[in-house]
Amino acid sequence: MRAYVETSGKGPTMSTEITVTVNGTAHTEAVEPRLLLAHFLRDVLDLTGTHVGCDTSQCGACTVHLNGEAVKSCTVFAVQANGAEVTTIEGLADGDTYSNVQQGFWDEHGLQCGFCTPGMIMTSEALLKQNPNPSEEEIRAGIAGNYCRCTGYQNIVNAIGAAAKAGK
Amino acid sequence: MVTSNFEYFAPTSVDEATSLLSKYRGEAKVLAGGHSLIPMMKLRLAEPGILVDIGQIEGLSYVRKEEDGVAIGSMTTYREMATSSVIQSNYPLLADASARVADLQVRNRGTIGGSLAHSDPAGDIPAVVLAIGGSVVARTRRSKREINIDRFQVDLLTTALRDNEIITEIKLPGLASGTGTAYSKFHQPASHYAITGVAAVITISGETCTDARIAVTGAGDKATRARRTERILKGKELTPPVIRRAASRAAAEIGDALNEDIHASAEYREHLTRIHAGYAIDQAVAAAG
Image 1: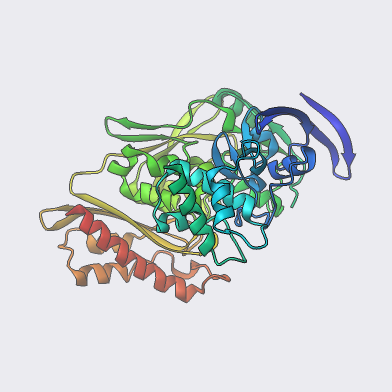
Image 2: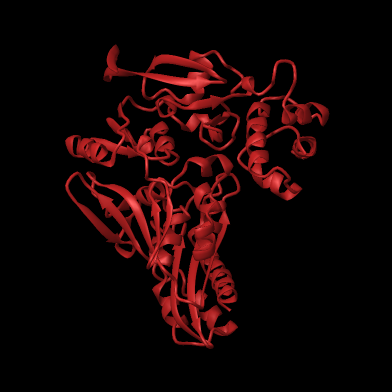
């Protein structure tokens, strides 16, 4: 499982083979243990919908689902996802049909620049799975780990509310 | 941000994990949910040569009602604790504090064992468990011991845990009838870490406080019992003046070790400790009645 792949200034670098199922497709890759899941998705699998904002597990732009639960992929090593199922923003739509949350963000214009949107949507999906009928207060608490620096959150909250209604 | 290189192991049993810790003693760190360790590694405040990931070990995530209390598996996440009916009914403050750690995503990953082992000075769980009482079960390859929670937090980011030990379980005692609990914190709005938090577990019989355990986090180097506050409460009827006087002593044990950083001055933290001790005691007393 382990092989020396390169030699950096600090000595040999180990690589570990992992298999991660991302949006339904199994990927087997040899990675450095220190590779973060966010960078595995973006740089190895070329799924750049997952954004890296703060890189300090605060802003939530990198949120993906790991075995169905929302996590900040900048704070998970790719090797920790070995054998797991990951869903990213690219895996939400069914062909041309948006998920309820994606449609909610479209209809309510739940974004401006769009940088936070993938993470915001992944967290909202998880929130509605835990609580399909949240109050406005519960929506705001649910997205406390996702920062938007444009909208002031109002349209995002409306979007999640609309998705909850559509899910009924 | 990229961490230092490390060698990675993902054992599937506690025996395998503790063997690795013995073999690489001093070099290896345990990786649980990773939400304290990975940020520290990114900042290169921690540069372990070897990581032993205990996330692949089955059977470390549970909440189990026992004859004399509740046993919680060390890999139980904040979310699992916040939504556990056993924890909600037996230790409402633990469910409440768990629901208020950071955010939804962090609560899905962070664990009770990781929080205790990391012993962040602003962590919520160390103070809550300290107020409940109980013990931390630690295993090595050959032995198993229970560390009383009162002796577990030693210093800043330092516990009684040895570097060849893994926390497998947290044992919490059953609380006497007439016990009320509460956790009150003033949090940093971005991280939701406690700038200051106070956990209170108070037992009232008739009109008299028969037992009180109060613990403070965020104010000093580690979670600390406010024993002077407890002494003022015990044996008395908890009238507002008694609670005020007890709360005013809540930072006494921390003394000169009050934290001072960009979030709050030492003076402000002392103030917050008194205020939140008052809130926590008030709420615990109301819950006891």
